Length: 431
Image 1 (cartoon, rainbow, N blue to C red):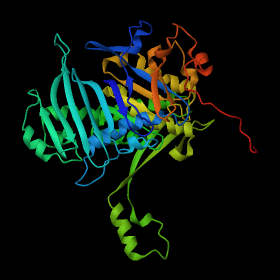
Image 2 (image 1 turned 60 degrees about the horizontal axis):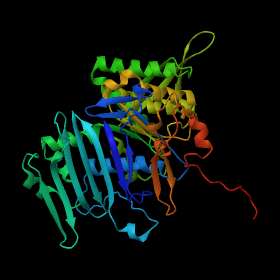
Image 3 (image 1 turned 45 degrees about the vertical axis):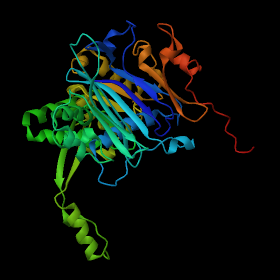
Image 4 (image 1 turned 90 degrees about the horizontal axis):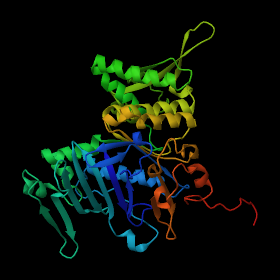
């Protein structure tokens, strides 16, 4: 489970900002928390703030961190980091990312700093459960010395394996964690696995329909598992009141005879296109409705459905994977195209007592103020972003304003009590 995420000098984040999922000592809505060793963690967190205040950048930061871990760069390849651009001092400084999480009963603290050219620092500490004192085990530390142009290493005795060989295989633009997983170091692979499998990220610019479809198509190899996933998807699409009575997911192999090439399309280009797409499979989704008065099944393609139906289906796969496999699901603009009742239902599913057994978590950004309900959220579950005088994002919790128990959170937010509201001047065409 995710415990804490820190980011600095990345996009709109100038100074280090921290998102914590550690629950406060408050006793209200106890089912919204889950005990993990000595820590009590929140199952869901919502982030509010005006447009361009940095909400999306927070989720993009964790996505970028994972990309750098999962996709090691080739020699000389640039790293996908974007520093804070509104101050010259920061443009040449490394961006910083750190995650604290619990995986297989051990708490880990892992992070790194990087510019587009190289990794500067990297560190990994572990806190195994069951110890009387909460003291970190240092697995490794890496630090780039700008004066000597050399990387300095420190290995703790707790990290086993051929550490020196791994160090020699780690290039300037590759993380030691990634190299360790690539060369099958068991300890580092376990940490790497959390980043590759521990959480799912849905950004508006991406099409997570593929996630939902792939989930079902992968299950095709196991008839029992396929039926389970189909049953899950079929039920939630029915429950959402879209008028849908079933779904059908099928695949079609690429047929070169159906490609609508223009008559004057060059032969060489035609052969290149056919070669690229040879063997590919196209997956189609159909939603089944009942025609009245006969009750006859009518099949609608994905494109024929409303934006809300398509959005709900897009989120269905990641949602099911998170709940059934105990992953963290991060969604930017959770409410996009969805009715507030549906959004509330998504959130409630993560906070039910049953969900706590596998450790599923939901972190989302939103503008839906109807969710600011003390019967749905604890005060430590609401976070805000706003820009400071330097144009940098400030991330903070509602608890910073010491709201009263049962306080009307929606009214307080819209009245400006917690900040994080846009300051809008009147729209005038002249003057």
